[in-house]
Length: 375
Image 1 (tube, rainbow, N blue to C red):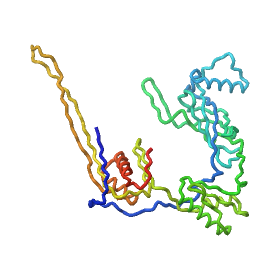
Image 2 (image 1 turned 90 degrees about the vertical axis):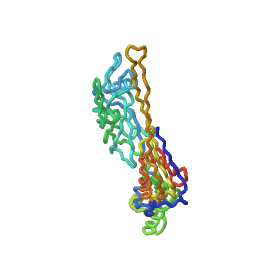
Image 3 (image 1 turned 180 degrees about the vertical axis):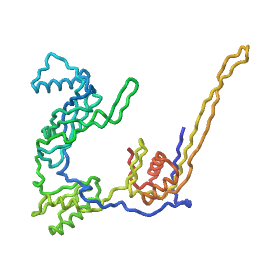
């Protein structure tokens, strides 16, 4: 049994000699616009399709358990002019898969993209298989690409009578450059009258700073302001009359701006991972961490009766209880920056799972000046 006690009290009246203040850092960082924002008209489009993988070494779908695989096989053979009536296939070298891909922006017919395949039936491995010609459709139902090629599987699986070894996933794989684009998107980049930039991490400070940097460029090149921050995520650039939209975007995306993000602490309790942002601060608090471990050991003793007596063999219980307590240090945390906060938490001598509990306690006390994200 383990018990953890986290006591968080105001330390304004305490005067311990521990002082962890090392200075104040800023969370701003310089970055190009292309690294922090994306063009709204230049987003990817998702494609999906249903296909068959053939050439498997007995690791395909069992056609009785996966009837859709057999139906697809019969339909494919009929399209190839082969009659399948009157017979039942028991092949184990074919598997039904779902094929997905991302259609990049401004893709032209004839270019190639990667596709991902995943098993739909009870296939045990797609290693060594070949994806048969599969059409990939968009959300509008139109076919934009056709995929075909050898499936690359990074997982490995080996099975014997008494042991099984598996590494990675063997029922999913990729076909590098396996799809050929057959239809381009109807929208044209140069038909637009403006450019809409979307921040990957929405923030009003970053959006306003981006608009200011673009306007400085606009005054130098076109003699006026051309950008406006609509909200925390969107910055709209109006196209000047004599400007080329592609060259304008090339110049804008290489402008360097100062980025800013809210203070945030991300905690993953399953893996014990803690990620603390640069601008995380905490108000002065006193933190005490201790762990009480109670171990109960049962060592029963068998008691034999005297010779030639009427006694019976009995079991005498023997219980040993050990209690140990670790930690118990008290420290004042006054984290004005990331380095100070980490040093203060390490000074208490706790492991990541204990730090997670401490962070939650500090947040409940209102002393953590940051957003605590639990995953």
